[in-house]
Image (cartoon, rainbow, N blue to C red):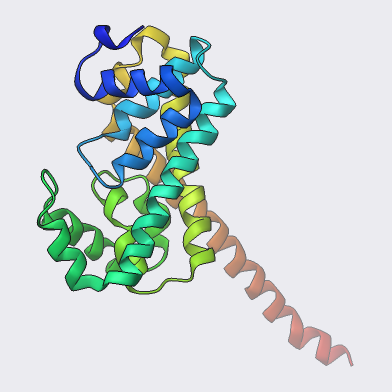
Amino acid sequence: MNETELGGIAGWAVSLMEAIGGPGAGIAVAAENFFPPLPSEIILPLAGFTASQGGMTLFGALFWTTAGSVVGALILYWLGIKLGRDRMYAIVDRIPFVGTEDLSKAEDWFNRHGRSAVFFGRMIPVVRSGISIPAGVSRMPLAQFTVYTILGSLIWNSIFVLAGYFLGENWHYVENYASVFQYIVIGALILLIGFFVVKKIRSRGDRASSRPASHSDQ
């Protein structure tokens, strides 16, 4: 497949991947952080499709797309620290196709959910691009921000890259079901986290209830 077979964003992404392989996929994904109209729901399946055609390895597609997500997020995080909230809003207001309401949504999400918003926010359109800014403004610890970003990005990217890889020429169907994937992934993660939280609370309760018995034996 070449650039003439696809138009717009998809054509640009394909030409970039064909030109430089995996790093091209990383650049395209990183660009989404600054220009949300570049949807990862198109770029990621395309990376998977390109891998299925031998343009890069599957591991390379997963590595480079996740690296692109993290690099783009770290740049916005750094800008949030250096420029602050008001200046970031002023800058975003001047960027074409990007509105301050998108940044406001990301900020509200971060304020409601705290630092875990960085992890879950990587799987939510619009929020995904802007969540790094309030994290930087609030000076969230860099190590924690990076870990949450890597984990959230790797989960999200893997689903779409693998879908594109296995669907092959039908990779474009993935975009139609992006919102379904989003809810399934977030729901599964919430259930998994809830399971571990309940398990931890129960184990603490068991340890607490066993202490009086051990004292009475003495």
